[in-house]
Image (cartoon, rainbow, N blue to C red; front, side, top):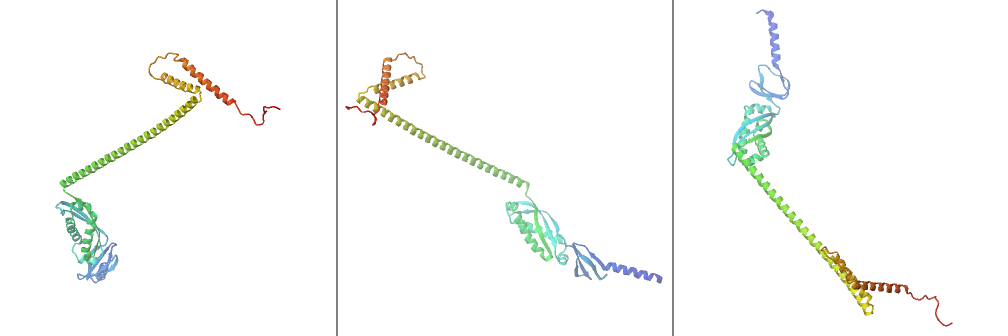
Length: 319
């Protein structure tokens, strides 16, 4: 080999060694550095210098939060119902060295651990509890899986049950049960409505009867009061006529008789039945009664015209 090529070879070797000595760690990742195959330290994002041929990168660990799909599996509940359950797990590596050297294939380990605990948690619950208490299932799974993965340098932030699928025949039975329950509630509500309507109708009828009875009571009271006043007026009129007869004045009696006679004729004439009315009807009696009324009027006018003598007026006597 010519001696002139030796500097070029040395320069190329220096460039290769320098290139292998520089290492860039991307953001969101951490690398483990191994010397002769043994873990030495963890390299964070940035530029790092290593010793070529003696040191090398062991594992490249993703430090960002990751999403892991848990495949569907068949689980038997406490009441022996077969359901299909799948989930999703959110986790983040906190310690790159532990995630690299404490467990082999971290994603497979977290997946299998989650599936095992899903069978444990769902198997301890009835079907109704499994379908209605997803938050409780998620909380129990998170607590158990997070505690189990802590030695691996992993933090499980959330576990969510994505779907719980019962068998088709069980879904049909649940649908029929739900429909029967809703029909039952509808019938109960309808019966309650009819009951309330009947109560309100009875209350209204009771109130109507009470008001009607109160009205009849008030009308009877008014009629009794009117009859009482009419009887009092009749009594006073009879008393006055009796007094007039006792004093020898028969005109008042004629007036009283004539009034009753005329009222009877008026009632007879206003009756709706067909009638034939002949005049005069005891015209002499009516005329006599009218004469009595005229005499009463004269007596009243004479009593009103007579006045007592004034104190300062002329006196009769002998001067």
